[in-house]
Length: 298
Image (cartoon, rainbow, N blue to C red; front, side, top):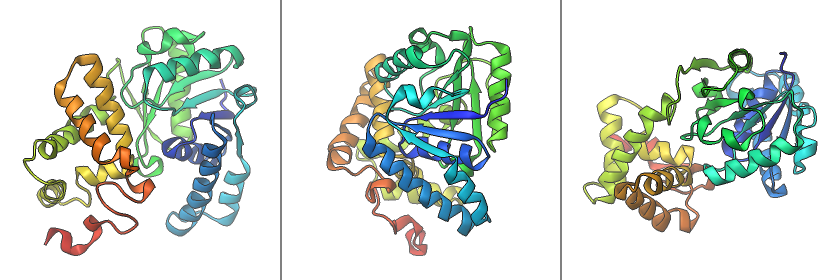
């Protein structure tokens, strides 16, 4: 199967990054979001990414113009998917929201279309019953920032067609990713199975008043010689995502520590619209967060 037309469902930060990366690599892209406001934000992101690619990644004006021309936007789901060879879904990390979306999607999508989820923690078998094509459903997961992390994690479920799995692996490579095939389902894939426990351990130190978030970041940066500590990473990825993940785990696993993290994040950050770098405020203030200052670890 030859992938040409790709629909990105979800016009948030990560969905917008995926859409840009796919368009920049020559595919026809339609960005779908339920809210027109989300589409407007995605268009603004894409103009920013065009400038970024020219200033830091050596892209030419012709390349970014072609990518921008390959991007279309709509809040009409049927319109968004009418020619889709593949769907990449990046909607909120809620099993109920995702199931509702795939149920509606199955009513309007062509039978040729491959469904892929960019879920950070949910595995395909948790969602597949809400689709009409279990053989063409699997996960294709990206890291943030898509073009810097270059990770394309591909994870099927027991009913995923092996040939469809291969097509998605090839698509991941064609859009500029290093394809990471998973041989069985794993919540968090490879990257988040490693990263989420690290971030949660960091949050626990702050929630339990062991240390301040800046001290945690300084410790990690000094110990490993890196530019970002765990709280800077949470700002970059988005604080609300980690609140959602811990809420999911807390409710499903009756995990009191996870629920304590949720309460801390929602009370001190999410409820105050401190979502991280994209909102100009999270644990740090942007565009000049303290951790970027040379004096931070002196």
